[in-house]
Length: 110
Length: 110
Image (tube, rainbow over the protein chains, first blue to last red):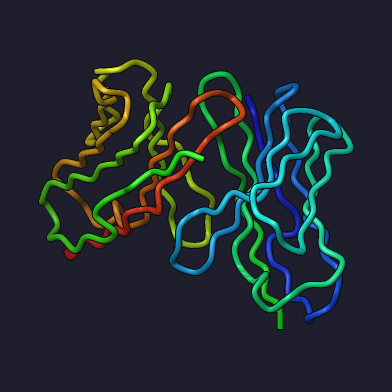
């Protein structure tokens, strides 16, 4: 069965520091991968999606970037974090029929 | 991109009551998905709908894919305290495009 992992689970970072969040998927090949951000008590905002290695589409202009170095690995990065980057970051993968989420990374920027 | 309107934003109900929430869009979707998110966790897929008019149940949950393919509803019968959470609808046009509603926050009073 398919499994999706996110690392780390929780992160506290100072403003201006870099960021790297990792998402890996097991049990499937060539999945579509997504990064979402969820502010406290709010809905899901699509940040990036990828249909294959090295293929990234950005939904919202911001100081974040994404990369897909391997088929089942999706990375969310920033060179300099802002206070407004705080939130709950969710990775998801989709196949032909449905989409599934990882457990999320809670990021607090101070 | 396509926008999903999910309503209501929040619901406060008594244990045992039935719940109904829905999503509408100005665009057509090929798939409707319903998720539940518990605090601090990623959304979990509840029901997936693939054909216009399709009515699918999962225990006390029932969801329908609207005939026009522009809407879907989710019903929860005889609510219990563990139904508390945020419910999201999602519409898919194709594998590359999945959009979420803003969520319905459900509170169940014992």
